[in-house]
Image 1 (cartoon, one colour):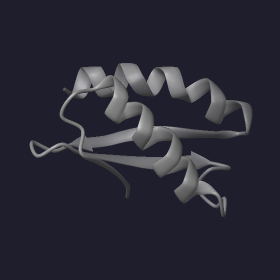
Image 2 (cartoon, one colour; image 1 turned 120 degrees about the vertical axis):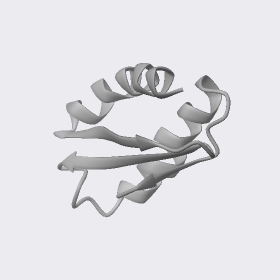
Image 3 (tube, one colour; image 1 turned 90 degrees about the vertical axis):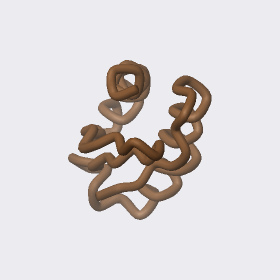
Image 4 (cartoon, helix red, strand yellow; image 1 turned 30 degrees about the vertical axis):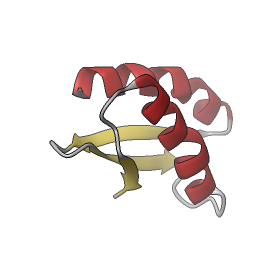
Length: 73
């Protein structure tokens, strides 16, 4: 599952990088929790939780079966 998550994140990265940010995969747990770290301008952005839930989590759930939640660490 980790490889599929990383592949999906590669599709998301260009949008984040266009705004000076990025996302790093920290861990994918056995129970479907994906832990990521928002970096660059994303790390201090007040909209980062919306980006995380409405953007990153939504796309990962669509593209990778078994993803239940995405959390920022």
